[in-house]
Length: 226
Image (tube, rainbow, N blue to C red):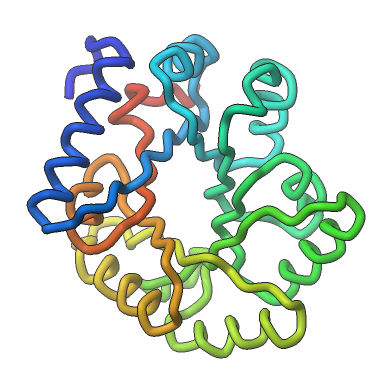
C-alpha cells in the first residue's frame, strides 16, 4: 500500500481487505481494527480520527498519556484506548486511569498491581492475557502450557476474568502456527476475544479467528523513530 495515499483511503482499503478475508473464511462477524498509533505524529492521528477511527492501540503508557490526556483529550470519551505494549507494575495506576483495555496481563505481580490500582482509581479496564506463543525468553507473555493455571489463579485469588488472549508471533517465523495456537487456547479456556495479526499478516489472523487486529504502518505510513 502506497504511503502517498491519504490516511482515510488507507483505512478504507484495510477495512475492505478485512471484510474480504472474513468472507473467505466463512465468518459473519467483523473483526475490530485497532489503529496502532505509537510514534506517529499528531497530524496523522488527526487524520485517522477525522476518518472515523474509534479504536486505538498504544505501546507505552507515558506516550499515551501525552497523546490522549493532553493533545487529543477532547476525543477521549469517544475513543476506545487499548494498551498493547508491556506494562511495568509501577505504571499500573496510570494505565488503569487511562486505558479501556489492557491486553498485556502476563504475570501475578502485575495482576496484584492492577487490583491495587483499580481499588484506588475506582475502575478496572477490561483485560486480555498476553501469551508468548513462541516461548521467547526476551518477550513478555505467559507460556502456553501455563495459561490454564494462570487463568485459574486470576479467578480464584483476584476475581479477575480476562475477556481474551493476545499474542505477537516471533519475528522471522510464519505467523499462522502461532495464530492457530492462540485460537485453540482461547477456545479451550472459553475466551471469545482474540487479539492477533498486524500490518503484514492481519488477513491470515482473521482467517484463523482474530477478533481484533492491530495495524500500524499499513494505516499511518512508516514510523519515524528519529
